Length: 48
Image: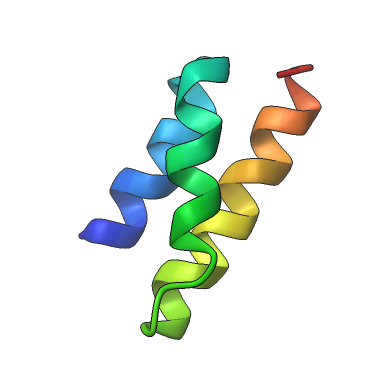
């Protein structure tokens, strides 16, 4: 559930959310870290 929330934030969030998402790339849960990386890719694709 947390990983889905992180990805959704990458799809819908704004530039102000980037720092929060970046912090999840260091999460001990590899699934969360992977979701954060995907979320950042989605933000990059949106030009954020």
